Image (cartoon, rainbow, N blue to C red; front, side, top):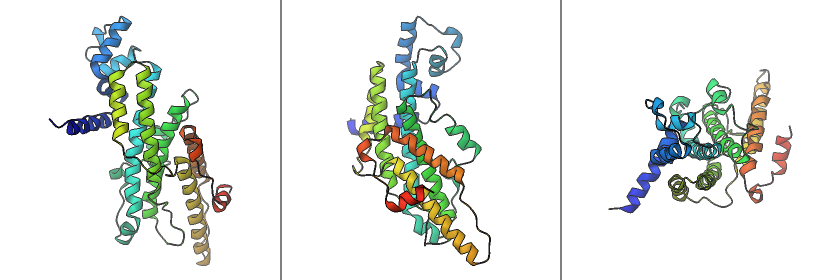
Amino acid sequence: MNNNFNGATTVGKTRAAMNGFMGEIIADVIGETRVKELFDAAGKHPDEYKDKPTGQIALELGVITPETKNALLVAQAAERTLLAAAKARNLATEHKNLVESGAKIDSKTLGIIEYGSEAYEKTFKFVGSPRDPDILKAAQSTNQAAQLYLGHEARAIKEHYHTDAPLSVGPKFADGLEQAAKRYYQTAADMLAKEGHTQAAERIANVAKSLRNTAKDAPVPSSLMDQIIVNERASNDWGNKAAMEQGYPGFSLNENYVGELKKVRDLTKLGQPATKAAAPTTKQKKELGR
């Protein structure tokens, strides 16, 4: 029997489970056997809930602690970060080819949750909630940063009117997002272990171990948000100049969007190693201060 294959299969199943609803994640990752142990320990035998999924019953009857739920939410955010970062990397890497070929970017097919959409508001409505621990704020805002990155790179292709001030920030920022996701997966495993969920902790830790090690100097998520702001302002300035030279009225950058980028940037810092945050360049300071 190929243990490496079995290990990869288990990791794949765990990662796939993290894209489900919380009740499904509890059943698949915590495990139905462990959940039944929690029912027994709490003296609860939910026969009246027999038609509902085990994980959902566990949530409704409160046998899943807030700490356990937070750990699973951290792992879920890590997985979603990985998926969005991989797509953003592909778009940024192929930016030139996609522009030159006139490729059509379908946001729905790519799973882009566009800023300003109803889906965006619903998905990220509670990110940064004062009730949440910093680790959850950081993990979920990093997922949000990955989505903003993906949306930005898609728009950089759709709105590539010129080359003097391109919107694309390039593929290197995906490394920093992957690095953060690996860290959050491991943190989630540690949190689950503290709650006594030994097998679940092992499953999540194995996912962390399976992820590649990116360069130690990979740009952190907060620097990604800063770079998007810089590129947005530069592109907007270039577009204004070109428009006015042709006799068209200028237009202003959406400052609500810039404010969102800054908010997400600050939340991601809650989970970043302090020593890795690169100081902005003089140009960035100028652009960010506007």
